[in-house]
Image 1 (cartoon, one colour):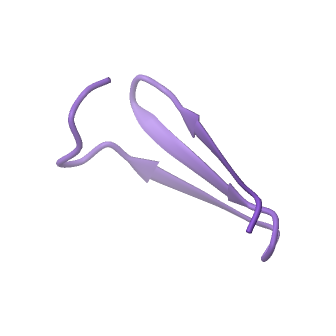
Image 2 (cartoon, one colour):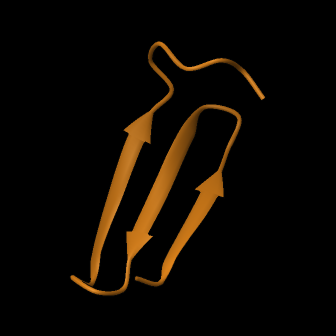
Length: 33
């Protein structure tokens, strides 16, 4: 499974090449990097 995780100060974008979908999750309950 080839996945690329892009971390931004406010949100996390998960790109799944297998399903070719883009998931954007906000950092709710996640520690600030």
